[in-house]
Amino acid sequence: MPPHDRLTVLDVLRGIAILGTLGTNIWIFMSPGGLLGYMESGWGQSNGMHWGVLALQQLTQGKFLGLLALLFGMGIALQQRSAIAAGIRWPGPYLVRAALLFVDGVLNYLFVVEFDVLMGYALTSVVVAFMLKHGARGRTAWLAVAASVHFMLLGVLVLAMAVWGDQMAAEQAVSASVAVSGWWDMVLLRIEHVWLFRAEMFFIAPMSVALFLLGARLLDAGVFEARGARLRRWLMAVGLGIAWPLDMALGVFGGDAGIMAGRYGTAPFVAMGVLAAVAEAFHRRPQPGVFGRRLAEVGRMALTGYVLQNLLASALCYDWGLGLARRVPDAWSVSATVGIYLLVATGVMLFCHVWQRRWTRGPLEWLWHVSYRRLTRGSRADGAVAA
Image (cartoon, rainbow, N blue to C red):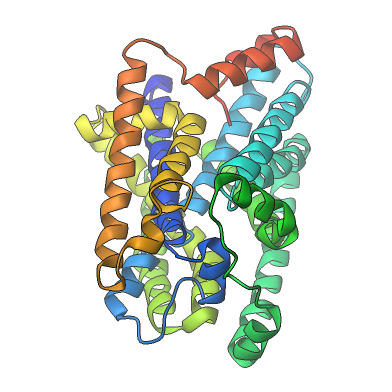
């Protein structure tokens, strides 16, 4: 696949990942108790919830978190290639990128949503940037270690939830009845419960390291190139043929423990299958259609799109905005949730399309780029693909 097409498929995948994360988060936005209420109810499950609703939630649960991690790893690998080609010591200026991303994450967490992923990915990117210096064998070793640690921790947690789930929920419950009447109240709530809201960031750290490294490995293995046809078929078979049905079964019938096992266990494999399927589609039809071009536009403005969709969903669902999470009757909650998702996703795609008709960078990307250039004095590596 030519470099231009490779970058296009990365943009499309990044757009899918950004809008896909909204598919998971929209259920949190529409939870009357916010993230606290969502956690207390067992991943948004209510007693007697129809299996179809559980399946609808499980469609996005963890898959696009995993896809985004794979793409971050590919982005770091491309940054490394660009730096080496420019004669710049690695990781060098990339650490500035990671620092800026961490600042973005802190601001997003405090002032937008409590389930931000940017902080965790920023810290992970620093670790992985140094790991990439160790060559193919070193990367493989670190990948194996990180994956082993993750699955060991996940296995212990899933077992504990399966055996003592109800008791653990009772002991760890945090009141979700806090009256969140304004935007500043939510900021204070995020500060008060920072360790609870940021717990996932630390839990998924080994998984994120493994997926970042795997993304870099898949890029080196030619997953977007003609030589990667066999690799793509294998990833689709494992991810979509085996992991996806198992993941859906875990989410629909496995209770809290099943959702945990799916989100952090099978979902990353599904993400690999999605990545391979999109890459294969590009080989069969190199030029994306209208919908593909809209996704690519979101991918090129990934940071802006991510923050914008959270702002729009917050304004629609939270009490400082329209407060639909509390106002929509229970009988209409599922339909309203799907409708709000489609509305927000369409709004993000429309904004990105209109913006890019005049400017090449999104507003946050432009601000980020200017900050990076000033801090690094215009390093020659700044033209590479962003992680």
